[in-house]
Image (cartoon, rainbow, N blue to C red; front, top):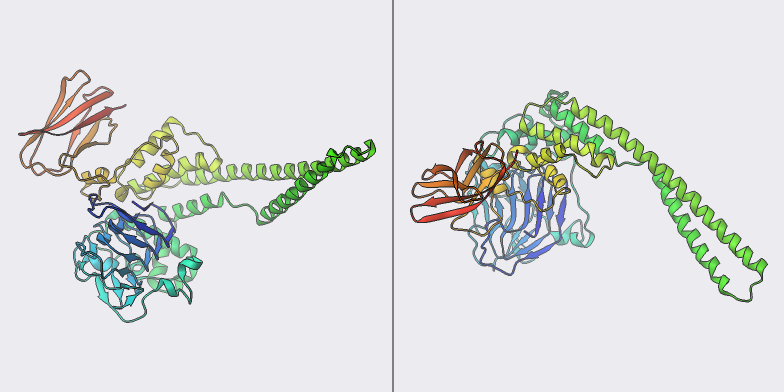
Length: 504
């Protein structure tokens, strides 16, 4: 992946040139730009070539703006998987190279024709800078529709080249069709899972809470906002605001710190200039003492300013810790009843107990809780899964969380970043405690067997693997904590193998 966003909020990815040297596309999930969930990504004016996917979207990403991007040779230039929701895109001026090798689909959304209106693309057919706003092909048929108007042009962003000024814009007060659907609770069928609906409602609540003028736009918005007052969604929004406020210093203090810095730099220059004459052998003792006295005065001023800075910053740190404690207490009082809410609460608590107080160590319990959440499928566990991963990587940055394997047992297909293999098998979670799932790259054509061996090569458990079943859940309660080896066997021999670690 050239650029990958995971659970990010209000991120801009613009004016990048991303290409690969291999146009055989061995990796289905290879992408110049890949966005996994999060909210409000602005992806604009990027040029891409020879990656399997140009831009790939996974999961719900409320408030997405994808505009002015130029696709060349790709297998799927613009690709949304069956879990993706990015809202409608009107006259965004995304471009396809008319001279590119024919892709599988110029734009592919892995949902039914009825569901494609979720992220409808409206365009006015034209050529901009050598690219066409109409893809060479798209699926489903109703996903792209012609409309009249002026398409976005990166070279004419309010009269100048966007990439020459790089000034991102987001319309905080703009309402879209998806907002009205969320507020009226009219989201139906896939990809609107219950977890997706919760995330979308939380994002719309944040938008209204930050821009109260929106309440006058549609009556349904006021009803939606009123209904969520006192809810878990509202509580988490307040906690999120308070977390970000931990890093706010009083503006007058910031101004004084900057003034002090400038004065310190000035005194340091005076010290340097004052010491230079001391190398003059003709100086009298009185002259030398006068120079030293002046330099000592400068040094004293530097010390006084540094002491003031240290005192103020320590007070700020103490205040930050006190605030973090208060926010943590508020987070503890939040009542949750769903996994996605429990994740949010747990990760908030760990963050406020550590990073929020400038503590760079984690307890064993905190580390275990982070790993447990980080090992969930993010489409079920929410964006807190990505926050848990970022925190856990402070403990161990060698751990890889494979969303394809984590989501597959739940029937959620996520494109894999590994090369296609004829015998790919895996066990998740790994390490396991009392239960795990065997995941097959593809179902077996004939019945097989899953066999686990101890370090001495002795068979300790065996399960049958039925035909046409992509995964099976099995118990590991009989296994003592250790490292085991496993094999998946078919009539023609070993189909796949690996290691399984049991911990308790």
